[in-house]
Image 1 (cartoon, rainbow, N blue to C red):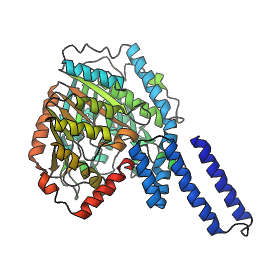
Image 2: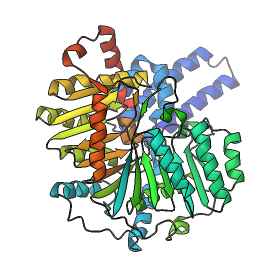
Image 3: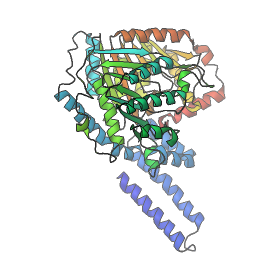
Length: 508
């Protein structure tokens, strides 16, 4: 139905343009525009209505089309046609499931029983699995990396030890000092015979130039851009971005979390001299899922460019039989346009719904959907210690205003909100009852939940969970708690701005 409506609109537009070109006396330009403009707006509105989006999203689109039609049409052409663009990504879900079934069939995962975990942890694991998360893996050691210095030091050390392959993937990769240092390390390993695959997002890393990438290609590194933004398919690629950050070395050590590659993540930015972020180092059996996610993205991005298939990677060089003695378990969850459901959002809901004492959240952008907001409000009202750690200074005025519009109902319910005062808070962490934690690439916003390719590592009852708690406690000391009385004194212009940004938050 949607496609037929769109085709009719296109045909009418072409006919009218043809009449204007063939005989300007038949139809005037002003008349042509007068017919096309309302027709376009009505057609877009009808398509949005028929797509059965969430009521919040549908209302936001209708309002912006009604009051700012030019802006609304442009935004729709760039970001709105999500249901149509999603179709080309759907095949990826089945490919990933196929790969993981083959891994399991080959008994490379050989998961140990989870009987040492609490009943609550086992229940959450099963719920997350049913909503698309991977199985939880024991024999997996994790290490919390608290800042850029520690993160990039560990990554460079792992790269230097590579013997077979290095898989590296980022949303933002800059050609600055740290970006060049990692690039040069990759070149040295490639020249020594190590297989290096470098995947970067076409929008987030659109600043990378040929002069930076060419030395990598000359050294034999396979360099691939995920959905190039400057292409004939501009309107088809601008929305679904790959926001994942993955480094895997020899299938035995991997990294993921909040940090991209850039000097700002080391506090070298004038705007943010302190950049607070968290990353995760993983060794052991949970890497099988992380490797599968990278290969899924790699094969999608290289489709039609080479002869590789899943079979080329189905060997012990990429999925070695290995496990590391460690307490607890790790569950890798991926989501994106190819997911059948909002897997990471559902995983976070399952984790937070299990809370008995506390829910601590760190996020640079807080634009929750209605289900998430309701759960947090109910939890706070029930006496659970709900805390949100948020940047004192944001890198996006629009997102910041939209985020603060959600503070009032949470504060009224008894939640605590902390502004990180020393710099920019970019970590993406949820901690529940000091037993279960999630750390990954996804912000707590609708774009991360529904549109971007994201991933998260859920940690159960491990030492790293306690490290996350200690970091939270220090961050709270380095923050200012928002007092309800002072927050209520915000001026009318600011409240209006917050309300307007909240209105369009489903589009952000």
